[in-house]
Length: 167
Image 1: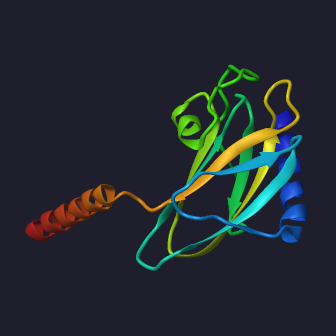
Image 2: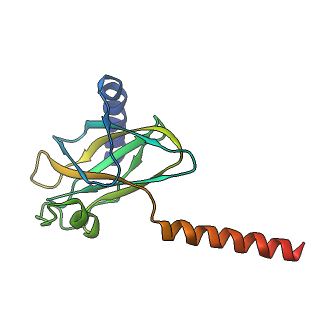
């Protein structure tokens, strides 16, 4: 029941604050740090343009102290949530950069796949780490690795070939 009320509060915070916020452009290839206050509250709106024929992976991850959790929506769509934080709520993670935070499974995180077009991502804090009233986290946008695209192409070609052979 409490979780439902918490999510409703986040939806209300996003609905009221997002239109008033100015968007931060999310560059490709580097971690951006963002700060936040007491949950539930709106944090920021990020914009990113994805080129035709491409897609982008956006990573959101808590940093520093274990226990912060976030919600986000893409292009005003359904509200989504980062993973639940580990049971070590309120303990220092020693993840002081985005790569270390993303590698630490104890920290709450989310992965968004964006297809071509112009996108907005609204982020809010839904739960603070035990004993804190704010903190910092990381967001990063990357083009997929060429090897991953090559493997996807091979799988699709194999499926097409096998279907063609059967027919």
